[in-house]
Image 1 (tube, each protein chain N blue to C red):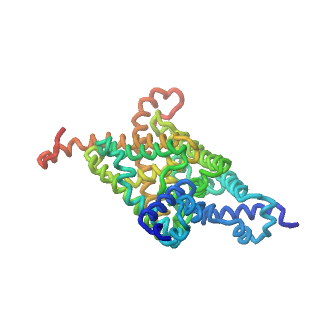
Image 2 (spheres, rainbow over the protein chains, first blue to last red; image 1 turned 135 degrees about the horizontal axis):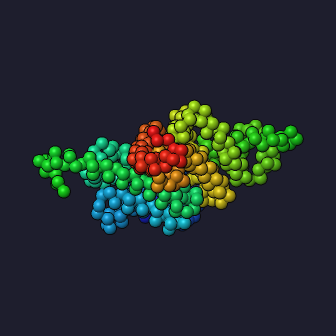
Image 3 (cartoon, one colour; image 1 turned 120 degrees about the horizontal axis):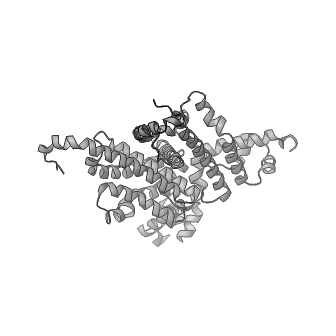
Length: 218
Length: 218
């Protein structure tokens, strides 16, 4: 194996597996195909990843460790408003659907339904990825909390947004049109708008009440 | 093959494949396993279904043709209100998650993400199943339309409800807890409540305006 046992080969195998799992699914992607597409010797794969499941775990760790560069940074660079950042993240998945002609939506969602019954360690990592995503959405919603009704459960709303997004991707990929995705986000926007409207009404008295705590009264 | 070429054997193969696809996924279920579990000779399978994809198509046709008995009837027998019937349908999936300890959610959703890229005819049947579901929800929402704001897009709202349901099942199955499902349905209920509240306000003048058309003024 010699020079195929370095970090470069390991990274190449992870990226190759990541792309093939995304395009074909985990079950339909064979170890032989990963080796062939990566252009490495079979021994190099087994050196780093004794089983296909070990490779899947490495792919899920890759997604978890690259959420900022892969998903958040491109959105945060052009949008400042925290509520709009949430819709910017959702728009990122829309672009992915369009760019790949509905072959790819959310890599974590794909794997979730395919492998969730069989691999407990994999399921833990799927959950870590989902929770990282909802925590980031919750962080943005907390920054925008002044515009939402006081009683809103922000972690619950964040998880709801993930549900809507994953279900909408499923329909868009099945129908091979962006319409179900746009429809779902439009309804989510309508829901948030209705809450913001409520929040505005609710916030008025509390803003005056708490003005002495240093809150802005605008 | 003799007596294994009758309708009984065909139905047995479809039901066996249906249950194995649901539990393990399509890719992970082999033809040999289907034959073994069904207890028929391999020739009987090939007689009815030359390829595994032919069997998948028959399974999807089975779901499409059995939506009333399998999903709607148990709900409609105990709930009359059309809006509550929609939430009753959603509660059916909740029961399925609990009964199967999160191994099974929505059979169509599972297959949608796994096979949507590879089989166009299968994708058509997945879509037929989804559209049949949203049409039924839309039929109920139309019956309840007097309580919703006049400008609501009922087919769009029905498709949104399907997105929420499918995404929520994905999270509940991954987390192995009912919480994400309950959370999503609670937010959906909150959204519908906000619309109903709006509908009530909107409806007041129109009810008086159209009182001569025979509408109730209560």
